[in-house]
Length: 391
Image (cartoon, rainbow, N blue to C red):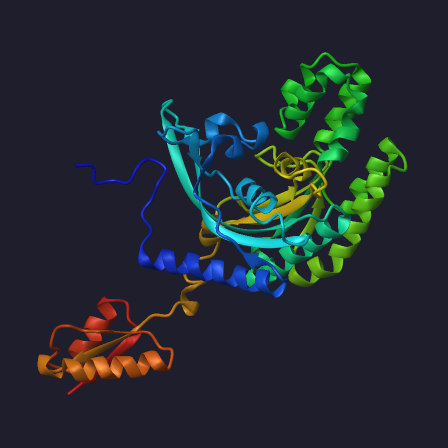
């Protein structure tokens, strides 16, 4: 009998589960304050929904053995967009929804074997609002959520922004047939591959410069204006950044504009963004999202507003980001209620109920403790906050 979990999966101990629950609850508090309502998309979906029209590679979807082509969700957005456009189609727009749940992805291990990862995600989706107001709301909500999490200065939190249309405008210097490959090599920072493209030297030089163009928004926007002229999209991006700057400064988040940034999944066709923090050993991506109007259009009927934007937090990454003791003060560690003799157990259960009524966690010791010192030792061994010994 196999005694280890499947490759890519893992067992969570009670403390890890409690920390994940606390993180999800903190985020949910913010979502609700902003008027978002909870939904619960299915874990199992049809493959055509999961792959989102080719936006998610077939090799990353965990398939199920069934008569219908089914798989496990690799993210939550496509399922929520489908539900919003079908079962929730009668609800007035915009729809403000949030969800949390486990996602599954398939990947190839170092030895060539297929493995599965499972991750916990929490995020929001704003559907049916095509204007820039939706993007502005969503990013302000993201900053509010970051503030609620209590990230510190040592985390060096950075909100990195890009735009699908902006990258498209920058690639117009490249012949049309070479643009898909140029986009791929730019977004993957493949400098050697970029140099190998059969391009005019002027275009190659522009792309080399573009690959390294990221940082303080005003500086990047100035360079983009030199290349693209008074493009209306640049003005919209500048307005968005200007609205974010005061709140970002208050919550300690650095804004960075990166014209070549694109998320892992090709779901997005407008604004895209990612939140990166400095972990104990390396940078950690804790959230990402963007606008996905094209995806919504695949599900909604004629006359509906095909618009959606959202983000998701990687709860596992957040849990690893915080130091081991950073969440311990918020955990409800229980009292241990112990008795000198087992015939006193009914009294111990009554005392435990009193603690519960006051909102304090408590558990009962099923073995007699001959002294208060022994009760304290048992409490310490179980990780309890202390002992209540009844004689």
